[in-house]
Image (cartoon, rainbow, N blue to C red; front, side):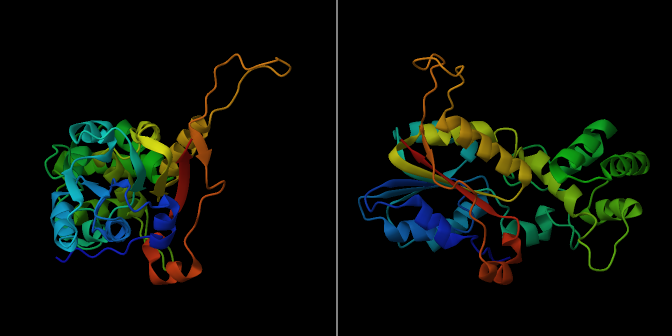
Length: 308
């Protein structure tokens, strides 16, 4: 399958990075290289783009699409390991970092990856195929309580307990192996209704987040990213889920620094220090035009932080 993916809020992200021609930039979620190509177009031969992705197929596609550029380094890794990645490259600070936390259209549409509830595929959902944990393992080995928690917390699914119970009932009879099998189980709990979203959407999202550990490390990743910026450098983060956005918002707020001393003290005693400022007091949302042209931008939010 061709690696098709329409970059969300492309112009807003690139403008938000405030790119310097000779700067060093990190695309922490390279994907189909949509954002990366725009960054590469704006930096000079003295600049550098570091492209990171967990998906080896995405790295291969990015290399082909950016083959005209000689100042790009490709890294097959997780953006959560940013500090180690930069250390390995002998780079202490960078001018800008972009994190697009969305799943690519290619990953969603390729049935063999098992991300989608449309069509049939094996229960996989790994962004990095070298990791051991798969959706099949989650669905067939997690306890009913664990499944219910994940589906509720990561999918915001109000029928989480019923879905978890049904999954456990079915796997006693037979191991659940395909996306179609899982969809059928979910549809025993939630019936399809005309004009409403697919009943399996929230559960599939929740399992994908669990398989790829997308939420738990995010706060620390944002803090590390800010720490690795040069003075005046910017971090742009695109989120597509309320828990992602909350982690980014909290990390940004904590990085601004808030004095917690009682009112009336002549000077600050708590040692609050600011790492910089939030450029986006409210997140930037997709334009009406983009929403019409790319339905997958619907839940996107862009937040930008500038290092002091």
